[in-house]
Amino acid sequence: MTTCELPTTEPLPPTKPAIVGAATGSLVTPAFARLLVMVFGSGLSMYLLTSVVPLYLAASGAGGIGAGLSTGAMMLAAVAVELLVPRMLRRFGYRGTLALGLVLLGAPSLALVFTSSLPLVLAVCVVRGAGLAIMVVGAVALVADVAPAHRRGEALGVYGVVVGLPAVIGLPLGVYLTNVIGYDALFVLAAVASLAGLAGLAMVPGVAGRSTGGEEQHVKVLGGLRGSGLLMPTFVFAAVTVAAGISVTFLPLASGNHLVVAIALLIQAIAAPGARWLAGRIGDRVGPVKLLLPAITFAALGAGLLVFVGNPAAVITGAALFGTGFGAAQNLTLAIMYDRSPKTRYGQVSALWNLAYDGGWGVGAIVFGFVVSGTGYPLAFALTAVLVAAAVLPTLRGYSR
Image (cartoon, rainbow, N blue to C red; front, side):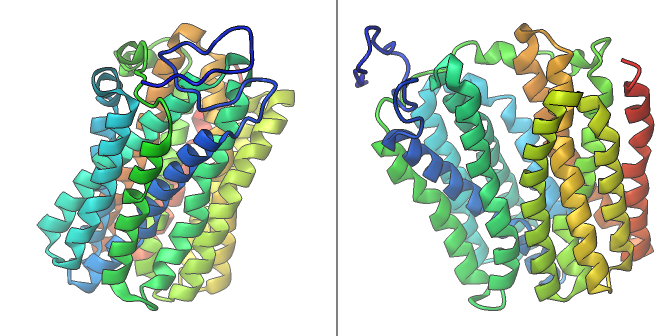
């Protein structure tokens, strides 16, 4: 493994790649920029198909149940695999592990060109979910591992902006492109977006370094809920992510107006990272717990407006409100969990938060698919809003801590 020498009196440790610049240099070095491009491409591959695969299955006769299973299969596979990624990093290093993630996320999309069979599409979703888990856990671990301690937050902030952009672009663009280039070309585009990252990964010097202490960060994850003050934010965040998975999976099916859906998903994707940044900035001053109730209220109102799914104004307004609440809840729940945990449990907190994210997203899509087949979309969306609103109760109890 090559080692890049820095113009400082202390050389960079040979086990860590020189991706992020030192305090006196540019944070976004050429190597870090290539890493961010890889992250962007893998995220774009995911979000281009997040709402499109359910549409593809519905058009093939699988209905709402098939649509829900597609999202649920991908996210639940991610939940299962993400606990294995630290061990993979220790054994294969960052380069080998991330390369595998890019392949698993991108290559299976090509299979969708040749089949719309529900079992085969679900198998593709499972494999892509494994690739997603590797990228989510591995890439952020690499950034945190190589960033100087005094600039780690800044590096992760840059990473957070880049990882959020694919949702802004991919969710509405994927739905829009189904009517422009068709499903097959879109599946190929999603595959290329991820696989192209292999070239960038090969050009990043020194990414053979292996993570340290990874396994310890992910053991006894659920045990962290007991007597730690983490149960409230975990439940609250899971409730909101349930609605998030439902909205991106079923809104295209429920509305039928692809232009309105594309606009709504774009607004939701823009509102979420903006609210996430703003909630963090204000939360540092007044405390994250105080902002969580307004965030949940916004999310519940936004989910509730989808009851009027035939009204374009209601759909777009609901997307804006939900995106704001969802983005704020992402930041606030994680901040609360970190505030209530010692540094020795930060890895456990991260794993627990990601499990709530992926598990809520996947389970919500699966359950909603079965519910909507018997109730119809308006009532099913109303039940979703009630679930989010129910998170207000533990939020209020959290004020006493």
